[in-house]
Length: 175
Ligand code: IMP
Image (tube, rainbow, N blue to C red):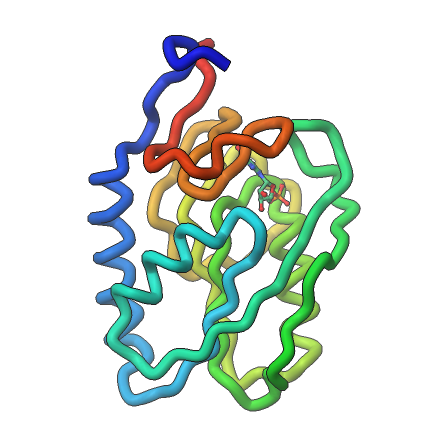
């Protein structure tokens, strides 16, 4: 993909500011509590790594991995668990950290799995929300940016083929 085919959607500076503000809000929401943060892999890794550094709390990190079969740019809804947690979540305050919610199918599946383990609480934060793509009602507690129904990548999110996760900005292909 040539760089002049790309359109800059959200700059690294805007991301940094949004993530820092979210980290401050979460620090006051969970004040005095110990928290288990679960980045959802693969896409949530970069957002989560910045977010936890902007939260002044006692945090443990676990990971969940999910993948969905489907066309290249939209989930089929057939979600597969690719990596599971190691700590028991029962009775714990859990924060699920995801890169993007589109149809909602991935989050619905993962939230159901986490709830079946009886955490004391579960909150979900997403960096990007593509509301126009929603197919199922899913609870999202905090959204950093609402975006249009375009395929985006960078800052942890991949382009078809699995590349571009290492870009600092979020971009899309020019229409
Ligand atoms: P959903 O299940 O349709 O809500 O989609 C969630 C998953 O699909 C995310 O975890 C991403 O991995 C992927 N995804 C959805 N939209 C995009 C996009 O625009 N770029 C890259 N990945 C996306």
